[in-house]
Length: 303
Image (cartoon, rainbow, N blue to C red; front, side, top):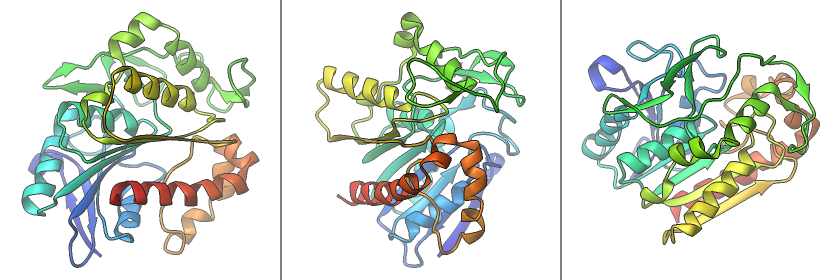
C-alpha cells in the first residue's frame, strides 16, 4: 500500500491518498468531514485499497488553508483532487463517497464538477445547511458550502438551544433522538427554503447508491433518502439508483475501516454506543450492517 498527502497551498485541497502497490483503474474520493475526525478518512481510503481501489480522502475543514469549522467550504477544491486522480494516477473510473455531512459535498461535487461513475451517500441529508462556528451552535449567516466564491443555497437549522448529550422522544422519530435531530427535522419543514436549496443528484449523471438507518439518532437520514429517491424518479433519472434502509440502523453506517488493522479503533465500540444510542442499543445488528454495507458499496463500484 502506498501513501501520499496533500496540502491546500500546494495542491488546492487537503487530502490523504492510499493506493494498491500496483496502482488501480478505479478510485474513490471519500468525504467524511474535518481533518481531525473521530474516524479518519485515510482509514476508509485504506479499506478501499483492500479491494484493489485507490482511496483519496478529502478533508473539509480543520487544516491549514481551510476553515476551522463547517463554514463556506469551497466545492471548487474537488476539481484539483479529480484532476490529480485522472492526470497523475491515470484513473479511468472515479466514484465519490460521502458519509453524514460529507454527503452534501459528495453531491455538490457530482452536480457541479461531474465525471463520476458512482455517487454513494451514507446517512445523508438532502439539503446544504447554514455554516457554523467551531462551537457548533453559532450560525455564520453563510452557507456551509461555496462554488466559485458564492454561497450555495442553504437551509438553517437552529442549534442555539441544543444540549448535545440530551436525548428525547419525538413523534416523527422511531427512536429517542438528539436535539440536533430535532433542529434538522424542523429545518426540513420550511418547504420554500428546502425547495430552493435541495441538492440535485440528478445532475450528476452517476449511478447512485443511498444508505441509511431508520433509527438514525443524529438527523432524519431515512427521510432524506426517501426524498432524494422521489425527486430522482420525478426527474426521470435514467442511471441506476438503489436505496438501502436498515431496520434499527444508526447514523453510524456504511463502509468502515479494516477491523484487523484497526483493533484500537474497534475497542472504542462501547464509547461509540454512548455517542450513538441506536448503535448502542442494537449493536449486533449495526455491526452486521457495516459488513452488509461494505459488500453493497464495493459491488456497486465494481459493477
